Amino acid sequence: MVSGGFDLLPRIRNWHALIFYRPIPGTRYQHIDSLFGDEVID
Image (cartoon, rainbow, N blue to C red; front, side):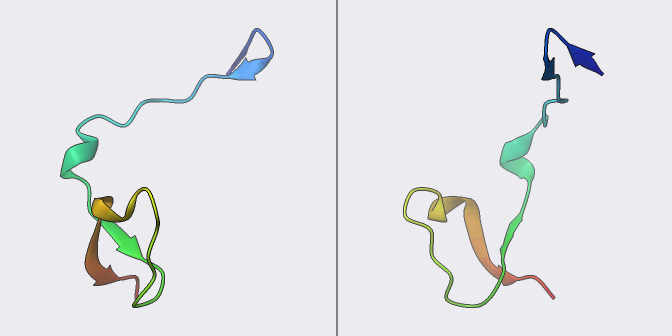
């Protein structure tokens, strides 16, 4: 749905319970690395 020239996107509830996966082992992100576990996408 478009309103006022921009898309309204649903919010992610309980985002702190989500598990984020790294694309390859050893990938590090400067500001958001703490959001990721050691798991890698298969």
